[in-house]
Each structure stands twice: as structure tokens, then as C-alpha cells.
Image (tube, rainbow, N blue to C red; front, side):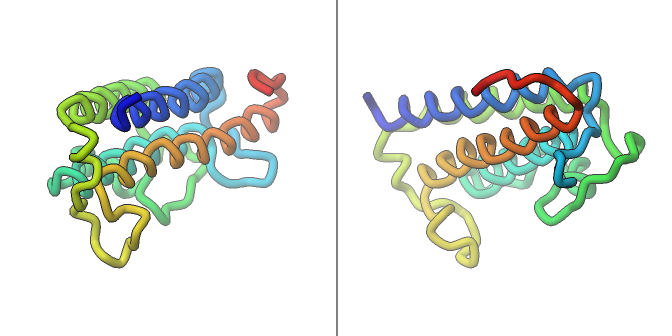
Length: 164
């Protein structure tokens, strides 16, 4: 297996887990996890915003393609229970599809050697984002991390476990 195939597989797996949970919460997108925190709508917007930071900013050296998501979803923001603070779930799902298609399309252009190329990440971000490959790895891990928050939000909403 080529490294780029592994990256693609990791992205697809983490997306499958997270999006299965997020889609199941379309009717209750502001439900916070049992301990408070990041509700499914915020998680979705944050993942989109972050993936653009990684692909567009750190890998391609361009601005984030969704500047309108900065205020509500950038790293360091806190979710609110006010639906008016956010785009709709359908709008965010569309942006996610657009973002992920761009990510996978760019990945298809890369060789395994390209994954070792230095990224455009600021040095203060450290080794976690130092190479193109490490940025792709962060996308997968980030998505899987936030899937756990959505799973907890589902339980807070009284839903049965989807995956065990």
C-alpha cells in the first residue's frame, strides 16, 4: 500500500465514523455532550474550518476558503445554544462535501515523496504540522477526536449507540 493510499483510507474511515454520527443528529444539532461542550453543529463547522486551515493554509499556503466560518468555528471558539449563531446543518454538510472533495483531489496529485515535503505551518505549531503528510494525518485524527464528542451528544439526546 502506498502512503497516499493509507492517508486516503484514514480520511475515509474517520469521516465515515464522524459523519454517521453527525447526520444522525440533524434533528438535534445543538445537543451538547453530557458534560457540556461541543455540539454536533459546532463540531461539523469546526472540522470544515480546520480542514481548510490544514489543506489551504498549511499545505497549499493559501487563505482559508471559508472565512465566514471563522467567528463561530475557529480554534478557541466556544459553542452556543443559539441556532442563529450558525449556518444551517444542510449548509455545513454541503461545505463539508466541498472541502473533503478538494482534500481528496489534492491528495490524488501527490506522490508518497510529496508527503515528506515541508508544510507552510507556522513554526510555533511544531512537528505535528511540519510536513504535508503530518497535516493530512492531523485531518484524520482531528475528525476522529471530534466524533467522540458527537457520540456523547447523541447519548445526551437519549439515542442508542450506533457503533460500539
